[in-house]
Structures are given as C-alpha cells and as structure tokens.
Figure 1: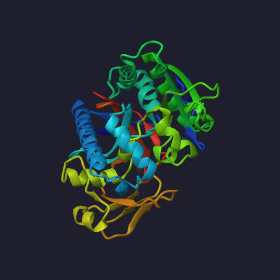
Figure 2: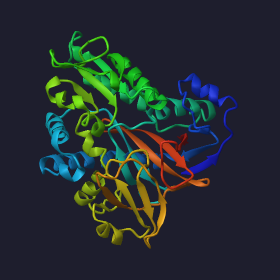
Figure 3: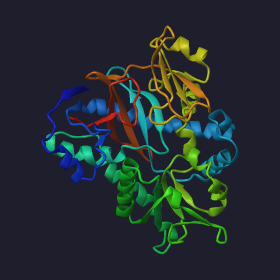
Figure 4: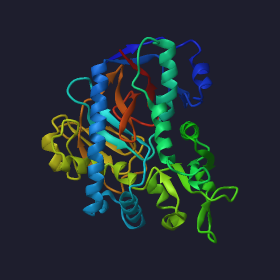
Length: 386
C-alpha cells in the first residue's frame, strides 16, 4: 500500500468532464485530484474485500438484533421511523448498496470507522471516473472496481419475475435539486437502472406530491410512484409532512427504511457489543469510560446521525482535543469509538472506502484531507493494484 506522487493529465479537467464529472472542483479547490494515487497489492485488495464482506454480514445480524430486541430507541429511532424500520426489515425489503469507511495503513487489519449505508456518495467517481483514469494512466494495472456491472446486475435482480407491464418496472429517482454532486450520482445510478431494464424518471424531492384521493405519491405528471430511489436520508424523510402516508402508499424505497439502522453511528456500539474484539472493529460504546481503557491512541466522539464529517471530535489519550468539526448534529446523542491511525497522505490523511453492492464488495474509493476528519470537500484520489 503506497502513495505515489503523479503528474496530472494535461487536460484532466476536460477528460473528467467528458465522462460526466462536472463537480471536480469545489470552492476553487480540487475535489478530484490526479497529483497523487495509491498502489495496492492483490493481497491488500483481498484483505479489504474480506473485511467488508465479513462486516456486512455482521451488520445485518446487528439489524436483526436491534429490531427484534426493540433497541431502536438507542439509535434515536422512535415513533413513525421505528415502525417503518421494523416493517421494512420484516418484509425483507431489497437493498442496493453501501460503503464501509476504513482506517488502515497496510499493517494489521482494516478497522471499520462507519457504514454509509443509506445515502453514500462518491459512487460515480469510484465506478466511472477513476476507471477512465486508470485506463489512461496505468493501462497495464488493475483496479478494485466492478461497480458498474454489479449495480446493473443488482437492479436486474429487482426486476426478476415482474411482467413487462408491471408499474414497479418504473423507477423514480430523487434528491435535493439543484445539487451537482448528488445529481451526478443520481444520474449514474439511473443509467445502471436503465441498463438493467428499468424505465426511469428523475424528480426533485420537493416535487414529490401526494394524491389524497388515490392514496398514492405522484410525480409532476400526476403519475403514481411505485418505486423510488432516494438520495435523501431516511431520518430527514421520516420528519417530512407526507411521511405519515408512506406505509399506506405501497411505494417501495431504495434504500429501504431498515437502512436507518446501518447508517446510524450507534451501529458501532451495537456491533462491538455483539462481536467484541473482532479484528475489523474498533471498540465503541455510548459510554466513554467503557471505551477509554481499550483506546491507547485516544478516542473519537461521533454524533449518531452525523454526516460528511460534521460534529466529530478527536481526543488524545490524555483527553486533549486534537481535532473537532462543527455541524448540525448532536442533539440525538453521541457514540464513542477508539481512535485508529489513518494512512498518511502527504501532509494529510486518507480514509479507504469499500463499496458493497448487495452482499458483495465491489470497489474502492480513497478520500484524503489535510486534517484528521474526512469531510464532503475531502479530495478523491484514484488507485490501482498489481
């Protein structure tokens, strides 16, 4: 596992825009960067694959325990949200994808930082943009990246057995609009769904309507919505006025409501309780004093619903603050996790994200930041392996 300095392609902006990445620069700073890349061995890729595959199985066991043992309130999931999670899990609602974030330097085992399992982004960059970069720059190397094929196959599984006229063969896809990054990811997912045989339609979250006479959600053309892919967090959706109609509407969601458990940082404490001392887990608890003796390198406090690096505080073993981020989260509670070393990336640090499609690990993305906290503006750096 090595980080290399690279010379960016002279026309890199035009090249990434050509394949559809029009948000390669954020606030005049590069989001997509080619002045560095990461090289792995096949054995290292296999270890990341094995870690993610194993953790996904464990995470599903955790959801089962949380739902059946009525632990959802520990996750801050109550009322309507809890009902939606429980019903969705017991129906075995189908799911599409997720992304594990790992701390790993190449030594020891990859350690899970969190599971972005509801609305993970950087999918388009992972699947398409870095693939074209690798073909242009390292054509004789390989890449941990079978996302395109895996996503299309997963969508095809969702269509299996449905008659050609079944309304569930139409997929609406939604996010907050305008938003360049979310819309870029949404259009890529739409393309995979179309390749699988779905008819698709894009709609802004704010444009989804409720037809009280038909008891159905409808799009801008008053067409009923039977299946929705939403790049919009479930905890936000459950607070919307129309959320009370979800159960009666008969609309299926990608991702399903039970993903609220996996995307919640309380999952870290639940998995550590169920699988203590597992080599791919870090000690975690709602109780700081329970984690501190197991955290020789310090502690990290994370808001249960925190996203994009918001409301994270990192502490040294002596309790002094090393890094902290503000944000809009925290009122829902926090979890404590042992601190693990991140891979060094020039002047900063790197987090490794392994993509899951269904139960299969299918790709790798690497995000670098000058600080210790990975944010939405952290740089995307491509990789290859030999």
